[in-house]
Length: 165
Image (cartoon, rainbow, N blue to C red; front, side):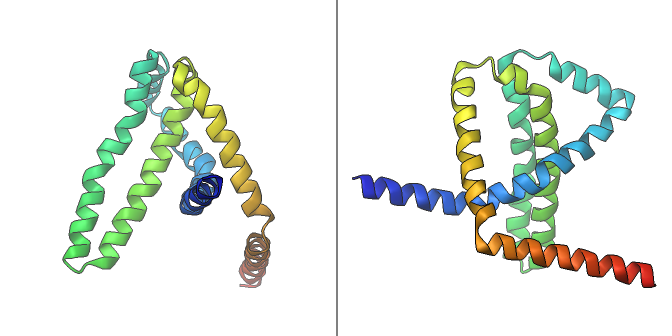
C-alpha cells in the first residue's frame, strides 16, 4: 500500500511540476504588473474594498477569476475543434497569463482574510511547504541547471548583439 501511495504522489507531483514552474515564474512579476493598476483611482478603491472583505467574501473573490476565465477556455476548445489551433493556443496562453496576474494580485490582497478560515490556515502552509520541496528538487536537477545556463548564455548573447547594433 505504501508503494502505491508513493507512486501516486510521484505521479501527482509530475503532473503539477509544469504548473508550479509556470506559477513560480509568473506569480511575482504578474502580480506586480496587476498591482500597477492600483494607480487608477477606481481600481485602487476596488482593491481597498477587497482587502476589507470577510473570509468567505475573500474566498469568493479569489475564486471569481477561475469562473470568469472558464468561457475563454471553452472558446479555445471550440476554436481548436474548428481547426484554429494557433488561435486556441494564443487564447489559452493569454487567459493563463491574465488569470495568473489577477489571481496573484487577489491572493496578495485576500491572504490575511483567507488565513482566518481554519481549513485554509491549516492546509496552505502544508501546500506551500510541499510546493517548495518539489521546486527545490526541480531546481537542483541537471536539466534545470542546464536550462538556466542556456538561458543565461542566451541573455548575454542578446545583450552583446543589442550593444553591437
